[in-house]
Length: 249
Length: 243
Image 1: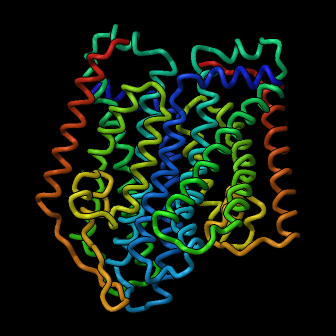
Image 2: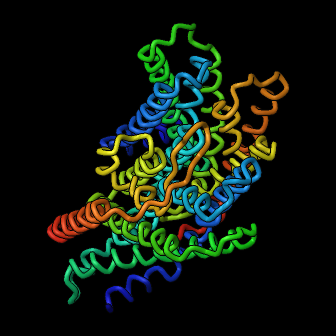
Image 3: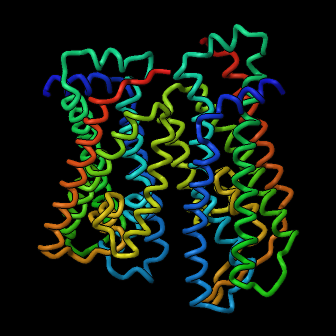
């Protein structure tokens, strides 16, 4: 707990929450512009489903890149400040520091998802969606985002801590964003392997085209997909923790 | 100046930055080509449709972020181990230090652009496009490169100032969206990120008129001079902060 509090303490002048909020603002601005245009063209598709599906697919592009940036900033300060020797000479185990960094990064991204959900609710009310806010869809949307973040943060943290050069971690984030954005084009087997595709894969709403029109489909969170993401999170986390704690400083 | 450029190249030795520089265009090409292949019925304009598919995400997202990564990378060594103190006390002017970094990033991006054009040609051949290769592609690529230098001048200023590797890349991501907004509102000529969209022809392949081409070049010159002058001025006037 103390290690976690110290991680947040180290971030106090990094403006990381401000930066995250600005990114969210950029994503939401783009998403809401796109949704407004879509609603103007096709008034029948006005509903919570349209908003959720658009934002879930945009998260596939944004969240891997933002995760990479957040994790890199949390990990790179130790590389830049040459503080690893200092840290390991204290009475704190390295795997506890690893866990504190992981919890810190996932908390920042949890803030992103929660703020995003609030933005969706406010937007829906402002544009006057007739039906009430569907709590089950919103909970699944938040849950899907959080669980996918678990796996992606675990992978990014492994890369950011084991390779000093952050260019690789950020490039992985970019590749992830690319995969997440185009995941719907991949066959199912590849979608199961690429963790970045789960932002749309675990979304409560999906869509398919029938007779040149888009139809929204409510999809319950699949136990299989959820199990795969959690399994990947555990694998990436423990593999990273094992590797990093045994690395020579 | 020549020695500064040689020193910058020397710093990039064994850096494996080349790996990052080739992966992004290849990924953009693979996805764009797959999309083109599966939607050939709707995409009727041959080489032009293929360019839209492959350059859309490359020019809009990945090239700007790649430039930001390159800029952060060429400043990385200075931010480590208090190396700014060493660099600032070396008998080299601040201007030549900055311009050498800008020259190296520009050459790296030029190589990426050439590689991207080669990939485009190969993809077109493999997809069986029978029409002649559009000569405009060289113009899109060259203009994209010129706009990239403007972005690089801005990003280098940020990367020199900000110690964090990731923060300038985050700023670049935000600037990409601001650039898209400015492009949509027809103010693309006034922001380097939108100039890249215009130059690379990612959203519109219509040829620029002579006046537009001149304006494009003038705006890029202004941005490159302004960002470089500001960054050099800051380096000359402000103390290097090592935390």
